Amino acid sequence: MTGSSGRRREGGESEQQRPNMSRHLFYSVVLLLVVMMHCACGAAAAGEGNVDKRVDALMGIKWEKIDSWEDVSDAGGKYSSLRGPSLVEVQGHVFAIAEAHCKDGVDCSDASFTGIASKHLSLSGDGVATEISVANAVVRGTDLLKEGSEGISNRNGMLRPTTLVIGDSVYMLLGNCSRTKQQIEGNNERGLLLVKGTVTDVGEKRKIIWNETHVVKPQGKGYSHSLTELLGGGGSGAVMRDGALVFPMQAKYKDGTSVLLSMRLPNSGNKWELSSKKPGKGCMDPSVAKWKDEYGEYLFMMAHCAGGYYDIYGSTADGVNWYPLGQPITRVWGNSRDRVGYGVRSGFATAIIEKRR
Image: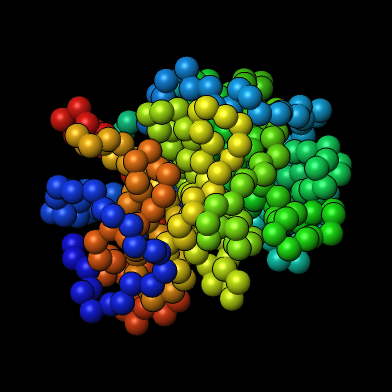
């Protein structure tokens, strides 16, 4: 799988790349990872459920209890599609989590225009495909925050669930459609919520109950100060070896062009930080996967871009910042032979080969 040497790279400031990274090895891995693309799915492998339970980056932040839980009734009649799915393994059980969209012309006023769907998967190992539809999923519509909490309204919906499993809990980063307070330039941007869930048996069904929320207020650095409309990339985040949590993100620049970045919660504090670099001009829906070698632990980021290609970026040590890595993936059609528009979102799947992830 090769890149187009004639294509000019856009966005992303130069940064010294780490040595001795075999490009042939990298592209071999990319070939393995791209198998998820045909699903139009940003799902990462469920292996993140095995991270060390001692990760405590989330212990020092403020959580708010969700007072009540109520699933959307007749979800199949109100919501028509699922987008941006991810797979998580919690307490030995695998769930699919996705963004659910209201049907055109249907009144979703008692829920929201977008909701969060989750579905327990009974994996038999016989190779039979499992169909996931809105009708057989549990859809959560609203009330993830108390009315008016932190100036955020979630009546208009929740966007881009980006998941992470730590110990016996699953965490979901959500973008929010609106705020109740007037927006101020550089502040009060689209709200970000981190929601904590646990697995519970309700009758004969096994479901994820979302029971706590945290309002995320990331601090910009460098170029990220001027970005707006910050959203999670969907799919899954990553837990780094130093205990930091990293989520793939996208935002918009001053001219409305979408760019890529990441958001990090260090293990040593309770402040969410945005990466200072903004690679991937004209790219969206990023997904990440971890890579370990003799030099340390890094992340790959892949996203589909306006030119119809898939761009790859690498992180500096422990997922702090980003730089272009190699050439774009040009031998995969994510849209059409003419490469019109963005096409389907990209996705990573991790594998363990010779005891290395």
